[in-house]
Image (cartoon, rainbow, N blue to C red; front, side, top):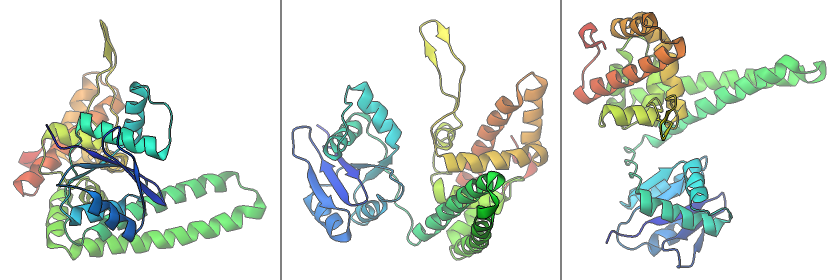
Length: 310
């Protein structure tokens, strides 16, 4: 019999731990002392499953990695869909912890790799840059319809965000240069026409598995693998979904450039378009090709050359 899976429901203030359905749920503070107490309650190394909660789970994940504990961070929507499928419609912290444990026990998500020492700050910088971009887009949308009385405040905030963005870009570049392994992987990624420094930074920070996994798994992690939508005799259209949205967005922007300047991807895209594929369908297929190419180059530890085109 496999070891039990621990489910932890994470909030800003609390960590609710559940194992077996009939066991009581333990509550620990989401603080260094609470995390230490939770770790002390764990038995032999067993999978701990937590939901991604916008950063509230990071202290626990770091501590689990430091203690050599396997930990899987899962999409909250997947857990909620799993709960609905099993008829668990009520929602409390204790019930959520139990359903996370049940989800982990039945589906056995893969533990996330331990981040190399010193790279958590780099990942945090990349995440912060994405947050700043999101805020800038929101402020620009507000500015378009703002009344005169508030336009100055929005413009002032946009100026501050632009300054912060420039500082973040510099900090990200310095963080990569300070890490020889990151620097080497960055150079491999940016050797492909269309892949810029910031696209490479997103991939390095948020898709560290690239180069050590298969092509299908890489496509699934990015969210560009086609998903079947069939039922009985009906064959629905295939759509992409899931994966890591920030990486998918970065790959999308890189592909827009790569289908113009990378010979293999350019020929592949044009062939699909000539065959009647819609632009969006052809572009998504080119995104998968680009992910596969980057995965191969990182796995082989070699830079792009024209003969390696798709």
